[in-house]
Image 1 (cartoon, one colour):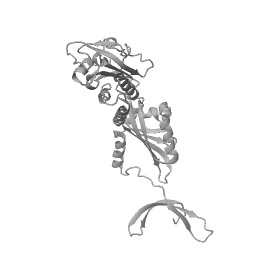
Image 2 (cartoon, one colour):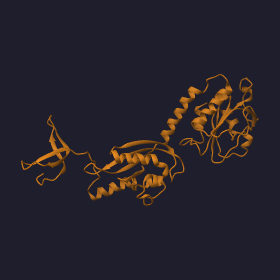
Image 3 (cartoon, helix red, strand yellow):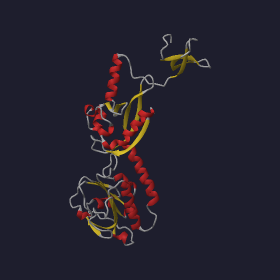
Length: 340
């Protein structure tokens, strides 16, 4: 203060209750016209430690950030990439050198919304948290849902010099929430009438709206005729009637038979097995003779068969590139089983 220059420092003060507290203050000299030194003292913006100062500790600090199992990236005050750890580099599908100096939209144009959030953090100096729906990054094969934490990086004076982006994979939590949403909607929509074919159509439409690309519901012939379901023989073919189908594509082009038509399934087919055991059955991605089974099976599609309640029939779902069935799910088995 004796030099008459502005300053920022931590100062020990005594609280009115007698406790000693440490606060950060900034002082600026005021013109006095020769009457003596006057100072304007205000509370300084809160800052955070940049890391340990000892050489050995600093090296460990750098290794911690570099080897953190969560994706982390740093951007400068113009929202341009500075650095990231290896996990973030893998998620982005690019090295740090390839991304250096680029904005997020220049790195990946689909991240326009996140780029805008980054600029908001730089403008306001306030941290933001954003939940991202499943998407596929440049370096990713499967879709992932992400929880992103954007934090401003400030200097000792509280000025924003950049930001950090910490990303947490929340894919499992996202699909768990989606399954609950589908179940809640199912309880409200399915079974609104005693008409079994109408209920089958409600099931198919709900599955397509929630998680599947294509759904068929086939019922035992005896059920369609108004009789009790007959036992399914382990050695005889089973005849099923197409009660409903639904697709994300107009006109349901995947279906090889129309609603109301019948198809005969072999005794060892997934549908016959599901009806006999009352358990769901994940089917191979591309099954020979799919047309004979009552639908056309495109490549790269996960399929599953689940029995309808009380073995009235079987529901079959498919999730392809347009839909993701969820983490650890073979086809849509958990979804279909939940709707039994």
